[in-house]
Image (cartoon, rainbow, N blue to C red):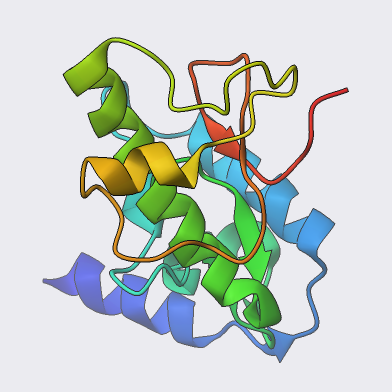
Amino acid sequence: MWKKRKLQKKQEDYQVKDISLSELKKAIQEYSLQLPDGVPLGIIVNEDLSLDYKLLAPYLKGIPRKKYYMSKETYDIFEEQDYQQALDLDMIQKAVDDYIMQTDELPVISGDPYKKVSFHKLERLHLIPYRPEHPLYISNEEDLVTYKKPD
């Protein structure tokens, strides 16, 4: 009980300050290195995809003034104005995973060298409720969905 109060007091001592996206990424990386085996990085992501700053405050030496979001599926980080992109990425990643399980193939546009996600294929199996505004691609790493067009 005493430890919990002491921990809460320490967390309250952190000042709200401007923290850049690169500082946040570095803090998340440091935090992830101290996680015990088997504990996923996703524990820092709240239900609404916002980050749990209480867990990151010791690494940031403060609480970010801006709100950041993280995809639970790909661990990509987004600024507040890109919140919809975080939601879209999670939705499409889940749909791609389901599509692969059902069909044993990637839901990409036929013949596309960049492995652009075919929203049409996902819709045909009723895996997505809407089409995201931006194109998405499947990376070569573990079939993760990304906004970045491969080189």
